[in-house]
Length: 193
Image (cartoon, rainbow, N blue to C red):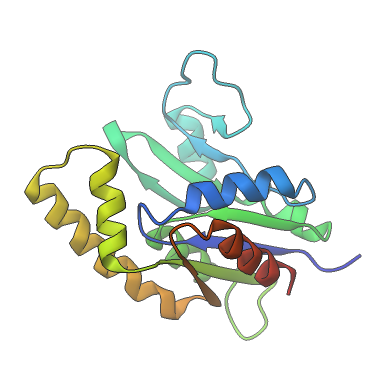
């Protein structure tokens, strides 16, 4: 059985990560897409396929027991985290685990003791999804919904910071408008490499 690995998909907001991940999920049942732990309330009709719903006390326990690779507090104070047991058991079975993370999550995971050092315990691959151009990415952000000028400036500053992470990744793929299939082939090829 081939050795498994963790593949992180990273990129700025609006670059197309969600579409890439949804397509990979549809095309590749052999890949594992781990759930996030979250303290936010379950929404009506929401199942357990994307999230493991936990209480604040349970999340604290997971952190204390080092069962979380990375985590963050987001909207309205809810916490989200990447769980060790949603990833490591599958890698040990020779499976490829694919996870979308933001740059902070990428930093945490790539520096985690399981994935760092001269001989890391588990292989880690990171693929940065680049926009065709900064202008194209700004257009995607502004086309989604009306946005205030100060919010747009904040997002552009955040995008500049995120784009600097591309050089820290194993590989990068440019997502060119109208050429999603080529982007997907490049990502699939890298994951298979």
